[in-house]
Length: 465
Image 1 (spheres, rainbow, N blue to C red):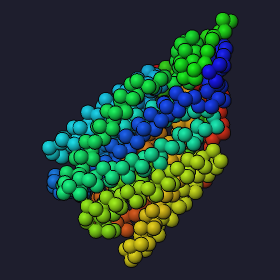
Image 2: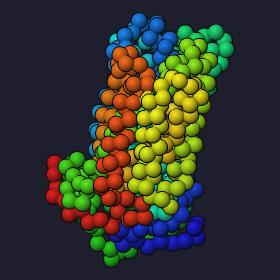
Image 3: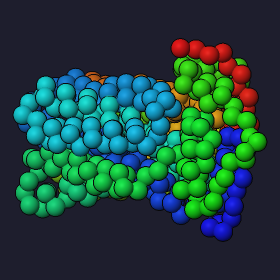
Image 4: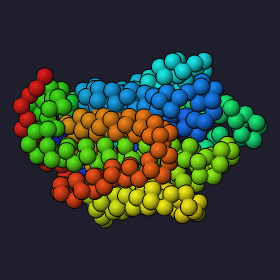
Protein backbone atom coordinates (compact mmCIF):
# COMPACT_ATOMS: atom_id res chain seq x y z
CA UNK A 1 0.00 0.00 0.00
CA UNK A 2 2.97 2.30 0.56
CA UNK A 3 3.51 2.73 -3.17
CA UNK A 4 -0.11 3.55 -3.86
CA UNK A 5 -1.10 7.08 -4.84
CA UNK A 6 -4.63 8.29 -4.18
CA UNK A 7 -6.40 11.26 -5.72
CA UNK A 8 -9.44 12.49 -3.81
CA UNK A 9 -12.14 14.87 -4.97
CA UNK A 10 -14.53 14.84 -2.02
CA UNK A 11 -15.02 13.51 1.49
CA UNK A 12 -16.81 10.53 -0.07
CA UNK A 13 -13.51 9.34 -1.56
CA UNK A 14 -11.96 9.23 1.93
CA UNK A 15 -14.89 7.31 3.44
CA UNK A 16 -14.92 4.83 0.56
CA UNK A 17 -11.17 4.28 0.80
CA UNK A 18 -11.30 3.44 4.52
CA UNK A 19 -14.31 1.15 4.09
CA UNK A 20 -12.86 -0.79 1.17
CA UNK A 21 -9.17 -1.17 2.12
CA UNK A 22 -7.44 -3.40 4.68
CA UNK A 23 -6.69 -1.85 8.05
CA UNK A 24 -3.30 -0.17 8.01
CA UNK A 25 -0.53 -1.00 10.51
CA UNK A 26 -1.00 2.30 12.29
CA UNK A 27 -4.76 1.69 12.17
CA UNK A 28 -4.31 -1.64 13.96
CA UNK A 29 -2.16 0.08 16.58
CA UNK A 30 -4.86 2.69 17.16
CA UNK A 31 -7.58 0.03 17.35
CA UNK A 32 -5.45 -1.82 19.89
CA UNK A 33 -5.07 1.32 22.01
CA UNK A 34 -8.81 1.97 21.78
CA UNK A 35 -9.52 -1.59 22.95
CA UNK A 36 -6.94 -1.14 25.72
CA UNK A 37 -9.02 1.84 26.82
CA UNK A 38 -12.09 -0.41 27.05
CA UNK A 39 -10.01 -2.77 29.20
CA UNK A 40 -9.13 0.07 31.59
CA UNK A 41 -12.78 1.23 31.62
CA UNK A 42 -13.94 -2.27 32.55
CA UNK A 43 -11.24 -2.63 35.18
CA UNK A 44 -12.30 0.64 36.82
CA UNK A 45 -15.95 -0.37 36.78
CA UNK A 46 -15.43 -3.85 38.25
CA UNK A 47 -12.40 -3.38 40.51
CA UNK A 48 -14.36 -2.38 43.57
CA UNK A 49 -16.57 -5.47 43.35
CA UNK A 50 -13.75 -7.83 44.33
CA UNK A 51 -13.54 -6.17 47.74
CA UNK A 52 -17.21 -5.35 48.28
CA UNK A 53 -17.39 -7.46 51.45
CA UNK A 54 -14.35 -5.78 53.01
CA UNK A 55 -15.54 -2.34 51.87
CA UNK A 56 -18.93 -2.93 53.49
CA UNK A 57 -17.29 -3.98 56.73
CA UNK A 58 -14.78 -1.09 56.85
CA UNK A 59 -17.27 1.69 56.15
CA UNK A 60 -20.21 -0.07 57.90
CA UNK A 61 -22.33 0.15 54.75
CA UNK A 62 -25.97 -0.85 54.58
CA UNK A 63 -27.23 -2.64 51.43
CA UNK A 64 -28.63 0.72 50.33
CA UNK A 65 -25.26 2.43 50.72
CA UNK A 66 -23.42 -0.40 48.93
CA UNK A 67 -25.84 -0.06 46.04
CA UNK A 68 -25.24 3.69 46.03
CA UNK A 69 -21.44 3.50 45.95
CA UNK A 70 -21.58 1.16 42.95
CA UNK A 71 -24.46 2.92 41.19
CA UNK A 72 -22.93 6.40 41.47
CA UNK A 73 -20.19 5.47 39.01
CA UNK A 74 -22.86 4.52 36.50
CA UNK A 75 -24.55 7.90 37.05
CA UNK A 76 -21.28 9.66 36.28
CA UNK A 77 -20.75 7.43 33.27
CA UNK A 78 -24.22 8.27 31.97
CA UNK A 79 -23.43 11.98 32.08
CA UNK A 80 -19.99 11.46 30.58
CA UNK A 81 -21.40 9.36 27.74
CA UNK A 82 -24.17 11.77 26.78
CA UNK A 83 -21.97 14.89 26.79
CA UNK A 84 -18.91 13.01 25.58
CA UNK A 85 -20.73 11.66 22.54
CA UNK A 86 -21.64 15.18 21.47
CA UNK A 87 -18.18 16.67 22.00
CA UNK A 88 -16.50 13.63 20.44
CA UNK A 89 -18.23 14.54 17.19
CA UNK A 90 -17.56 18.25 17.62
CA UNK A 91 -13.92 18.43 18.75
CA UNK A 92 -12.53 15.16 17.43
CA UNK A 93 -11.85 11.66 18.73
CA UNK A 94 -8.21 12.19 19.70
CA UNK A 95 -8.66 15.20 22.01
CA UNK A 96 -11.43 13.51 23.99
CA UNK A 97 -9.31 10.35 24.26
CA UNK A 98 -6.65 12.26 26.21
CA UNK A 99 -9.00 14.28 28.40
CA UNK A 100 -10.91 11.29 29.76
CA UNK A 101 -7.74 9.42 30.76
CA UNK A 102 -6.47 12.37 32.83
CA UNK A 103 -9.75 12.24 34.74
CA UNK A 104 -9.60 8.47 35.22
CA UNK A 105 -6.07 8.60 36.68
CA UNK A 106 -7.04 11.28 39.17
CA UNK A 107 -10.30 9.58 40.17
CA UNK A 108 -8.80 6.10 40.63
CA UNK A 109 -6.10 7.34 43.00
CA UNK A 110 -8.60 9.46 44.93
CA UNK A 111 -11.04 6.55 45.31
CA UNK A 112 -8.32 4.21 46.55
CA UNK A 113 -7.28 6.72 49.24
CA UNK A 114 -10.82 7.64 50.31
CA UNK A 115 -11.10 7.91 54.11
CA UNK A 116 -14.87 7.60 54.24
CA UNK A 117 -18.03 6.75 52.33
CA UNK A 118 -18.79 10.30 51.10
CA UNK A 119 -15.32 10.85 49.58
CA UNK A 120 -15.43 7.43 47.93
CA UNK A 121 -18.79 8.26 46.34
CA UNK A 122 -17.38 11.53 44.98
CA UNK A 123 -14.35 9.91 43.33
CA UNK A 124 -16.41 7.02 41.98
CA UNK A 125 -18.68 9.58 40.37
CA UNK A 126 -15.70 11.31 38.74
CA UNK A 127 -14.33 7.96 37.61
CA UNK A 128 -17.69 7.23 36.01
CA UNK A 129 -17.55 10.48 34.04
CA UNK A 130 -14.13 9.47 32.71
CA UNK A 131 -15.35 6.04 31.62
CA UNK A 132 -18.47 7.56 30.08
CA UNK A 133 -16.33 9.93 28.03
CA UNK A 134 -13.96 7.18 26.96
CA UNK A 135 -16.25 4.44 25.62
CA UNK A 136 -17.99 6.41 22.82
CA UNK A 137 -14.61 7.69 21.61
CA UNK A 138 -13.01 4.25 21.72
CA UNK A 139 -15.83 2.58 19.78
CA UNK A 140 -15.91 5.41 17.23
CA UNK A 141 -12.14 5.03 16.71
CA UNK A 142 -12.47 1.28 16.17
CA UNK A 143 -15.29 1.70 13.66
CA UNK A 144 -13.54 4.49 11.77
CA UNK A 145 -10.19 2.75 11.38
CA UNK A 146 -11.79 -0.54 10.23
CA UNK A 147 -12.93 -1.52 6.77
CA UNK A 148 -16.57 -2.43 6.18
CA UNK A 149 -15.94 -6.19 6.28
CA UNK A 150 -14.30 -6.20 9.72
CA UNK A 151 -16.10 -3.37 11.51
CA UNK A 152 -18.56 -5.60 13.37
CA UNK A 153 -15.95 -8.08 14.53
CA UNK A 154 -13.46 -5.43 15.70
CA UNK A 155 -16.03 -3.26 17.49
CA UNK A 156 -17.46 -6.31 19.27
CA UNK A 157 -14.06 -7.18 20.72
CA UNK A 158 -14.77 -4.65 23.47
CA UNK A 159 -16.95 -7.22 25.27
CA UNK A 160 -14.47 -10.08 25.81
CA UNK A 161 -11.90 -7.50 26.89
CA UNK A 162 -14.41 -6.28 29.49
CA UNK A 163 -14.72 -9.76 30.99
CA UNK A 164 -10.97 -10.28 30.76
CA UNK A 165 -10.50 -7.09 32.76
CA UNK A 166 -12.99 -8.33 35.36
CA UNK A 167 -10.90 -11.50 35.74
CA UNK A 168 -7.73 -9.42 36.01
CA UNK A 169 -9.21 -7.54 38.98
CA UNK A 170 -9.35 -10.88 40.79
CA UNK A 171 -5.82 -11.83 39.71
CA UNK A 172 -4.57 -8.47 41.01
CA UNK A 173 -6.29 -9.17 44.34
CA UNK A 174 -4.79 -12.65 44.73
CA UNK A 175 -1.25 -11.65 45.86
CA UNK A 176 -2.71 -9.25 48.43
CA UNK A 177 -4.82 -12.08 49.80
CA UNK A 178 -1.74 -14.30 50.03
CA UNK A 179 0.06 -11.49 51.92
CA UNK A 180 -2.82 -11.32 54.43
CA UNK A 181 -3.97 -7.96 53.10
CA UNK A 182 -7.56 -9.03 52.43
CA UNK A 183 -9.05 -6.03 54.23
CA UNK A 184 -7.37 -3.64 51.77
CA UNK A 185 -7.96 -5.59 48.56
CA UNK A 186 -10.51 -3.07 47.28
CA UNK A 187 -8.11 -0.15 47.77
CA UNK A 188 -5.25 -1.82 45.89
CA UNK A 189 -7.56 -3.00 43.11
CA UNK A 190 -9.13 0.43 42.59
CA UNK A 191 -5.83 2.32 42.87
CA UNK A 192 -4.08 0.18 40.28
CA UNK A 193 -6.70 1.30 37.78
CA UNK A 194 -5.00 4.70 37.88
CA UNK A 195 -1.69 3.09 36.96
CA UNK A 196 -3.21 1.30 33.95
CA UNK A 197 -4.82 4.57 32.83
CA UNK A 198 -1.52 6.46 33.20
CA UNK A 199 0.35 3.92 31.07
CA UNK A 200 -2.36 4.06 28.42
CA UNK A 201 -2.32 7.87 28.48
CA UNK A 202 1.38 7.79 27.63
CA UNK A 203 0.87 5.52 24.60
CA UNK A 204 -2.19 7.42 23.39
CA UNK A 205 -0.36 10.73 23.54
CA UNK A 206 2.50 9.52 21.34
CA UNK A 207 0.80 7.05 19.00
CA UNK A 208 -2.81 8.11 18.41
CA UNK A 209 -3.90 9.87 15.23
CA UNK A 210 -7.17 11.56 14.38
CA UNK A 211 -9.82 9.47 12.63
CA UNK A 212 -9.73 9.91 8.82
CA UNK A 213 -13.52 9.60 8.70
CA UNK A 214 -14.02 12.30 11.31
CA UNK A 215 -11.49 14.50 9.48
CA UNK A 216 -13.40 14.02 6.22
CA UNK A 217 -16.53 15.46 7.82
CA UNK A 218 -14.99 18.25 9.87
CA UNK A 219 -11.74 19.42 8.29
CA UNK A 220 -10.97 20.98 4.90
CA UNK A 221 -10.23 18.44 2.18
CA UNK A 222 -6.50 19.25 2.17
CA UNK A 223 -6.25 18.58 5.93
CA UNK A 224 -8.32 15.42 5.63
CA UNK A 225 -5.96 14.19 2.92
CA UNK A 226 -3.00 14.63 5.31
CA UNK A 227 -4.76 12.58 7.99
CA UNK A 228 -5.49 9.81 5.50
CA UNK A 229 -1.93 9.88 4.20
CA UNK A 230 -0.49 9.60 7.72
CA UNK A 231 -2.78 6.70 8.60
CA UNK A 232 -2.18 4.58 5.51
CA UNK A 233 1.35 5.70 4.59
CA UNK A 234 0.33 6.60 1.06
CA UNK A 235 0.56 9.71 -1.05
CA UNK A 236 -2.79 11.49 -1.10
CA UNK A 237 -3.44 14.48 -3.32
CA UNK A 238 -6.55 16.60 -3.75
CA UNK A 239 -7.86 17.12 -7.25
CA UNK A 240 -7.52 20.80 -8.06
CA UNK A 241 -10.92 20.82 -9.72
CA UNK A 242 -12.69 19.32 -6.69
CA UNK A 243 -15.43 21.34 -5.06
CA UNK A 244 -15.47 21.59 -1.29
CA UNK A 245 -18.80 20.53 0.09
CA UNK A 246 -19.23 23.34 2.61
CA UNK A 247 -22.58 22.10 3.86
CA UNK A 248 -21.29 18.60 4.61
CA UNK A 249 -18.33 20.01 6.54
CA UNK A 250 -20.39 22.27 8.77
CA UNK A 251 -23.61 20.31 9.19
CA UNK A 252 -22.31 17.89 11.80
CA UNK A 253 -21.28 20.70 14.13
CA UNK A 254 -24.92 21.78 14.28
CA UNK A 255 -26.52 18.39 14.87
CA UNK A 256 -28.05 17.53 18.23
CA UNK A 257 -29.29 14.25 19.68
CA UNK A 258 -32.57 14.95 17.90
CA UNK A 259 -30.86 13.76 14.70
CA UNK A 260 -30.72 10.09 15.76
CA UNK A 261 -34.48 10.10 16.34
CA UNK A 262 -35.38 11.33 12.87
CA UNK A 263 -36.29 9.34 9.79
CA UNK A 264 -34.66 5.96 9.35
CA UNK A 265 -32.57 6.42 12.49
CA UNK A 266 -35.57 6.25 14.82
CA UNK A 267 -35.97 2.45 14.54
CA UNK A 268 -32.22 1.91 14.84
CA UNK A 269 -32.00 4.08 17.94
CA UNK A 270 -34.98 2.38 19.59
CA UNK A 271 -33.59 -1.13 19.00
CA UNK A 272 -30.06 -0.19 20.08
CA UNK A 273 -31.49 1.47 23.21
CA UNK A 274 -33.55 -1.58 24.19
CA UNK A 275 -30.60 -3.94 23.75
CA UNK A 276 -28.10 -1.71 25.55
CA UNK A 277 -30.49 -1.05 28.45
CA UNK A 278 -31.51 -4.66 29.06
CA UNK A 279 -28.04 -6.13 28.64
CA UNK A 280 -26.60 -3.53 30.99
CA UNK A 281 -29.22 -4.06 33.67
CA UNK A 282 -28.85 -7.85 33.60
CA UNK A 283 -25.06 -7.68 33.71
CA UNK A 284 -24.66 -5.07 36.44
CA UNK A 285 -27.34 -6.74 38.56
CA UNK A 286 -25.67 -10.15 38.30
CA UNK A 287 -22.31 -10.09 36.51
CA UNK A 288 -20.89 -7.17 38.49
CA UNK A 289 -21.81 -8.86 41.76
CA UNK A 290 -20.15 -12.16 40.86
CA UNK A 291 -17.70 -11.75 43.79
CA UNK A 292 -20.63 -11.40 46.20
CA UNK A 293 -22.56 -14.24 44.52
CA UNK A 294 -19.45 -16.44 44.68
CA UNK A 295 -19.28 -15.81 48.43
CA UNK A 296 -22.94 -16.84 48.78
CA UNK A 297 -22.48 -20.00 46.71
CA UNK A 298 -19.09 -21.21 47.93
CA UNK A 299 -18.60 -19.53 51.29
CA UNK A 300 -17.43 -16.20 52.69
CA UNK A 301 -13.67 -16.76 52.33
CA UNK A 302 -11.79 -14.22 50.20
CA UNK A 303 -10.14 -17.01 48.19
CA UNK A 304 -13.55 -18.35 47.10
CA UNK A 305 -14.51 -14.85 45.98
CA UNK A 306 -11.30 -14.41 43.96
CA UNK A 307 -11.43 -17.82 42.27
CA UNK A 308 -15.16 -17.53 41.52
CA UNK A 309 -14.65 -14.10 39.98
CA UNK A 310 -11.88 -15.38 37.71
CA UNK A 311 -13.72 -18.49 36.56
CA UNK A 312 -17.13 -16.96 35.89
CA UNK A 313 -15.68 -13.99 34.01
CA UNK A 314 -13.63 -16.35 31.83
CA UNK A 315 -16.95 -17.75 30.59
CA UNK A 316 -17.85 -14.18 29.66
CA UNK A 317 -14.58 -13.71 27.81
CA UNK A 318 -15.15 -17.00 25.95
CA UNK A 319 -18.69 -16.01 24.97
CA UNK A 320 -17.53 -12.55 23.90
CA UNK A 321 -14.70 -13.83 21.71
CA UNK A 322 -17.00 -16.42 20.10
CA UNK A 323 -19.69 -13.80 19.47
CA UNK A 324 -17.13 -11.44 17.98
CA UNK A 325 -15.83 -14.14 15.61
CA UNK A 326 -19.39 -14.81 14.38
CA UNK A 327 -20.51 -11.18 14.03
CA UNK A 328 -19.77 -10.91 10.31
CA UNK A 329 -21.33 -14.32 9.54
CA UNK A 330 -24.38 -14.25 11.80
CA UNK A 331 -25.07 -10.54 12.12
CA UNK A 332 -25.84 -8.56 15.27
CA UNK A 333 -29.53 -9.40 15.56
CA UNK A 334 -29.15 -13.18 15.35
CA UNK A 335 -26.42 -13.16 17.99
CA UNK A 336 -28.51 -10.98 20.28
CA UNK A 337 -31.52 -13.29 20.02
CA UNK A 338 -29.40 -16.39 20.71
CA UNK A 339 -27.70 -14.76 23.67
CA UNK A 340 -30.95 -13.58 25.21
CA UNK A 341 -32.35 -17.12 25.06
CA UNK A 342 -29.35 -18.61 26.87
CA UNK A 343 -29.21 -15.79 29.44
CA UNK A 344 -32.96 -16.04 30.16
CA UNK A 345 -32.82 -19.80 30.68
CA UNK A 346 -29.75 -19.48 32.89
CA UNK A 347 -31.46 -17.01 35.24
CA UNK A 348 -34.84 -18.76 35.21
CA UNK A 349 -33.43 -22.20 36.00
CA UNK A 350 -31.02 -20.82 38.58
CA UNK A 351 -33.90 -19.09 40.34
CA UNK A 352 -36.16 -22.14 40.21
CA UNK A 353 -33.62 -24.75 41.32
CA UNK A 354 -32.32 -22.56 44.15
CA UNK A 355 -29.41 -23.81 46.22
CA UNK A 356 -30.24 -27.50 45.93
CA UNK A 357 -26.99 -28.31 44.19
CA UNK A 358 -23.90 -26.10 44.02
CA UNK A 359 -22.70 -27.68 40.77
CA UNK A 360 -25.98 -26.94 38.99
CA UNK A 361 -25.97 -23.36 40.27
CA UNK A 362 -22.41 -22.88 38.99
CA UNK A 363 -23.30 -24.26 35.55
CA UNK A 364 -26.41 -22.05 35.24
CA UNK A 365 -24.59 -18.89 36.36
CA UNK A 366 -21.78 -19.66 33.90
CA UNK A 367 -24.40 -20.21 31.16
CA UNK A 368 -25.96 -16.83 31.92
CA UNK A 369 -22.60 -15.05 31.73
CA UNK A 370 -21.70 -16.89 28.51
CA UNK A 371 -25.06 -16.14 26.84
CA UNK A 372 -24.96 -12.51 27.90
CA UNK A 373 -21.45 -11.99 26.48
CA UNK A 374 -22.17 -14.02 23.33
CA UNK A 375 -25.20 -11.95 22.40
CA UNK A 376 -26.66 -8.76 23.88
CA UNK A 377 -23.68 -7.94 26.09
CA UNK A 378 -21.31 -7.64 23.17
CA UNK A 379 -23.70 -6.64 20.41
CA UNK A 380 -25.63 -3.82 22.07
CA UNK A 381 -22.89 -1.25 21.62
CA UNK A 382 -21.97 -2.76 18.25
CA UNK A 383 -25.54 -2.00 17.17
CA UNK A 384 -25.26 1.56 18.52
CA UNK A 385 -21.86 2.16 16.91
CA UNK A 386 -22.50 0.77 13.43
CA UNK A 387 -26.07 1.99 12.90
CA UNK A 388 -25.01 5.56 12.11
CA UNK A 389 -22.71 7.29 9.61
CA UNK A 390 -19.58 9.06 10.83
CA UNK A 391 -21.34 12.41 11.23
CA UNK A 392 -23.74 10.85 13.78
CA UNK A 393 -21.57 8.11 15.28
CA UNK A 394 -20.45 10.07 18.32
CA UNK A 395 -24.05 10.97 19.06
CA UNK A 396 -25.19 7.38 18.50
CA UNK A 397 -22.52 5.79 20.67
CA UNK A 398 -22.87 8.50 23.31
CA UNK A 399 -26.62 7.98 23.55
CA UNK A 400 -26.12 4.21 23.56
CA UNK A 401 -23.68 4.52 26.43
CA UNK A 402 -26.10 6.82 28.24
CA UNK A 403 -28.87 4.22 27.97
CA UNK A 404 -26.39 1.53 28.99
CA UNK A 405 -25.56 3.47 32.14
CA UNK A 406 -29.24 4.00 32.93
CA UNK A 407 -29.57 0.21 32.94
CA UNK A 408 -26.43 -0.20 35.00
CA UNK A 409 -27.65 2.31 37.61
CA UNK A 410 -30.73 0.15 38.17
CA UNK A 411 -28.74 -3.07 38.17
CA UNK A 412 -26.05 -1.73 40.50
CA UNK A 413 -28.57 -0.35 42.96
CA UNK A 414 -31.29 -3.01 42.92
CA UNK A 415 -29.27 -6.22 43.34
CA UNK A 416 -27.90 -5.68 46.88
CA UNK A 417 -31.19 -4.18 48.06
CA UNK A 418 -33.43 -6.91 46.62
CA UNK A 419 -30.99 -9.70 47.48
CA UNK A 420 -30.96 -8.54 51.10
CA UNK A 421 -34.76 -8.78 51.20
CA UNK A 422 -35.55 -11.98 49.28
CA UNK A 423 -32.23 -13.80 48.83
CA UNK A 424 -30.08 -14.61 45.82
CA UNK A 425 -32.27 -17.11 44.01
CA UNK A 426 -35.51 -15.15 44.10
CA UNK A 427 -33.55 -12.08 42.95
CA UNK A 428 -32.18 -13.79 39.82
CA UNK A 429 -35.64 -15.23 39.13
CA UNK A 430 -37.12 -11.74 39.11
CA UNK A 431 -34.24 -10.47 36.94
CA UNK A 432 -34.99 -13.06 34.26
CA UNK A 433 -37.74 -10.74 33.01
CA UNK A 434 -35.05 -8.33 31.74
CA UNK A 435 -33.50 -10.57 29.02
CA UNK A 436 -36.97 -11.92 28.18
CA UNK A 437 -38.20 -8.39 27.41
CA UNK A 438 -35.06 -7.75 25.38
CA UNK A 439 -35.63 -10.95 23.41
CA UNK A 440 -39.24 -10.07 22.57
CA UNK A 441 -38.27 -6.58 21.42
CA UNK A 442 -35.42 -7.81 19.21
CA UNK A 443 -37.69 -10.38 17.57
CA UNK A 444 -40.19 -7.67 16.63
CA UNK A 445 -37.77 -4.97 15.41
CA UNK A 446 -35.87 -5.86 12.26
CA UNK A 447 -32.59 -4.00 11.77
CA UNK A 448 -29.03 -5.25 11.46
CA UNK A 449 -26.10 -2.99 10.51
CA UNK A 450 -23.69 -5.77 9.53
CA UNK A 451 -22.80 -5.64 5.84
CA UNK A 452 -24.53 -2.28 5.34
CA UNK A 453 -22.54 0.81 4.38
CA UNK A 454 -24.30 3.41 6.51
CA UNK A 455 -21.96 6.08 5.09
CA UNK A 456 -24.20 5.95 2.02
CA UNK A 457 -27.15 7.18 4.08
CA UNK A 458 -28.36 10.58 3.08
CA UNK A 459 -29.37 12.18 6.35
CA UNK A 460 -30.91 15.37 4.96
CA UNK A 461 -31.50 16.50 8.51
CA UNK A 462 -32.59 19.94 9.46
CA UNK A 463 -29.87 21.90 11.16
CA UNK A 464 -30.44 22.09 14.87
CA UNK A 465 -28.60 23.99 17.54
